Amino acid sequence: MKNKAIFLDRDGVINNDVGHYYIYKKDDFKLNENVILNLKKFQKNGFLLIIISNQGGISKGIYEKKDVEKVHNFLKKIFEKNGIFLKEIYYCPHHNDFENCICRKPDSLLLEKAISRFNIDVSKSYFVGDSERDIIAGKKVGMKTIKIEKNKFKISII
Image (cartoon, rainbow, N blue to C red):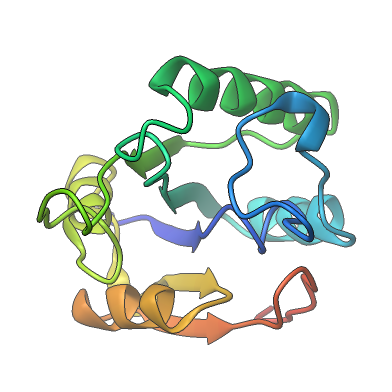
């Protein structure tokens, strides 16, 4: 049996990015309102939770992979304290100003990896994002997409 999943962009969807284009410090990481409530609901209804994020600041030399990992570990601890368990966090460290890649959204390599690894039925899955590149990536793999207003996690699919 195939799994269903909610794929989520990170900055602007999971966490608030007002005043910070790049979020790579724990002190700058603030969850958006309704994230915990919605993710608990999705998880309760059998959806795997997977984050797909562009982290081009690594390629630009603004921060390092270890900074991203620290923020992700911080996020996982917050979620676990609230009974939310992410299946995985995938991120692209590249930026188009320096290199071309197929893992950076709007391309879909990271989505394809997760779909294969976790045996996901795209017809029962969603990509939630706050930008057009998120929506394009989700549509490339054939899943439903939901574009939310930046930093406003208000959706209902169940």
